[in-house]
Image (cartoon, rainbow, N blue to C red; front, side):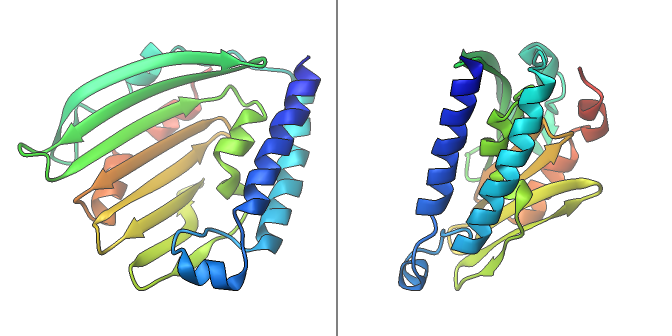
Length: 206
């Protein structure tokens, strides 16, 4: 059953990556087009390779979402935490634990959603963090999108300077994804929020 689920999941993610990369004309019309077709193919191949290896190693029990919630900072670079939630979901043999914190200033003109996701190192993570297997570097009139590094960890950034909204995500230990999504804030703010999470402590969780 898990083998069939793995093949189905890999196929769905592969199709999503490939169909998401249109022609040059479409890329000009849509600023949020992420990668070229060749990049998507490379991502699919690498994803399949890593996902197969993960399946051989077997599933890992996800960290309790209550433990993940403890890593959410009470204050996100000056923005008050207004809510903290957590949950665990499962389907087709895959389990995901998630902790989410919502932050904002007094009038919510600046808001940040911070999430910590644990997929247990299963092939599910290869779909959630497909960007970790490719290189992206793109600029438009309204902003940019790129992959980079935060210390030893691969990151993905996307920012719209016109709307002042964006996100930054980091993959930790090939199983945890920490994402900060903001509105009314600049990218430096989002990076500072992400820096408030103890990534080394997260890496050691089992």
